[in-house]
Image (tube, rainbow, N blue to C red; front, side, top):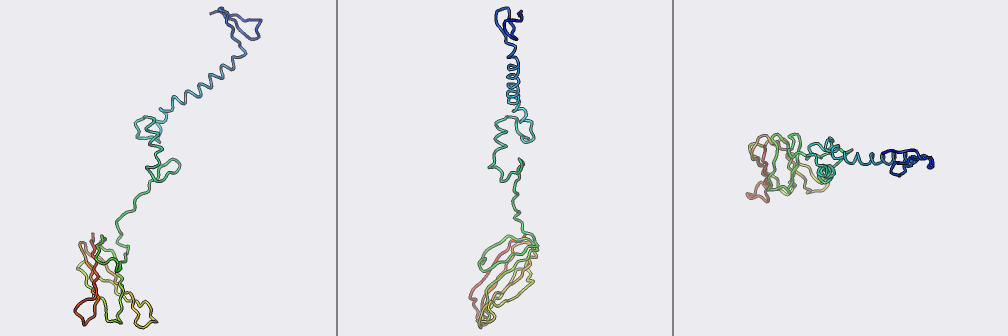
Length: 199
């Protein structure tokens, strides 16, 4: 198509078909094309960029699925700078160096323990009444400590707390038994028994 400069129009060109192109508006057209390129190209390339991002590693490359996985905050407890920080569960295995204390509230119960672990048994006792604890243990338990402490030394007839320190030296089912009785009476007033499943 032929065109010629139209001297009657400032900075314009007239085509052979009679249409006129105003050259003074040419920078505006170029600017519009650049804006469209900036907006359209990143949007069209976004799925490809996201599918290759390390943040979506292991995803099939489908953009909606990747977005759902990345922003699913209910699946993990904590986030820091876009990195998932998962809180690890506390181990249920009790170290042999840890000591546990059991009381009358644990009477008749069974506990899973570790071989070599130390435990303490604390029971109320009042020798002034003639009642004392008579204890016995199974073969896999060693009594390493035996003590009694008066609760109120200034009060006559006051009772106290009897404490036994036990070492669970062997695996298997172990048992600690204590009879609360008077030495001259055949029947016990009460009985305390606790079982340990030692592994």
